[in-house]
Length: 325
Ligand SMILES: [Zn+2]
Image (cartoon, rainbow, N blue to C red; front, side, top):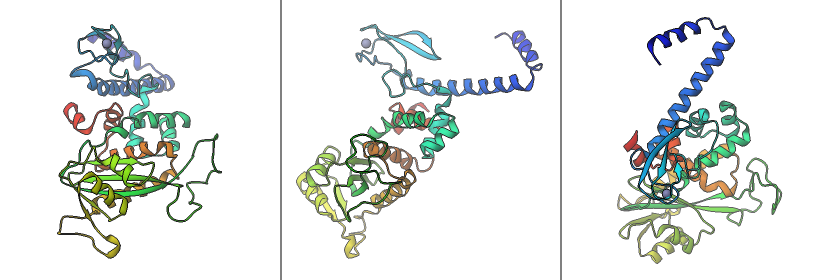
């Protein structure tokens, strides 16, 4: 826009009465949010765009739509943009995404997020799991040196499911009907190394087979696994041929040889449990998404930004994010 044109527009704005002025101010804010989101989203493909249909690297710029650069694949002719093939493709109300990811960075409930972003609760719920689909998979791919593992349990929940219930729903999280561990307890396995790399798994069963299957691809062969001397973890370590240092907490032992302990993983578990309380029971089906959400918050050490949540939702790991932000 030319300077004179802009001055005329600015002059016209002075004539506005409060109502249209407020509408305009809202619209300008929305445009600002959409542009901020588009800039972040474009980070995904700026370096080396590849066709999401066939993976071909020969792509050319092909106009733009909705503020995003379009590309066309030189091999299969498919056109795409930076959102194509991500969980956020075709998600509406882009002007609210950063407000929503702010809510996620704070670990807010669906009800609170819906209220702040002025969207329906069902929308806030649907968005939550769209934004969490990829962070859930962004676990460490290898743990090295001394690693600490711990099992924890969450009560099985059919929250939100009306059909196919095997028992009547508990209210607001509730308590198990049986004492101790039972089929109602869903096992999770958390493992961290001393660099802070973290993996988590929702297991079908907390036995050596399931633990071994989860940890074997991730633990370096010369890693040393510290556990709280639970039988299944020890058996899994033996089966994997990984050195194991059981720390017998029950017998009052906390540290062996000054370096073998499970305080890191136990503290992580406590923070996870404490944080999960606010959700009053999480549907078992979504448990892995919540573990990924918590990992995202925990690994940012209290500095998780709305932009970082958005980039994580697009599949960017914290290391990849460092390169573009
Ligand atoms: Zn293609």
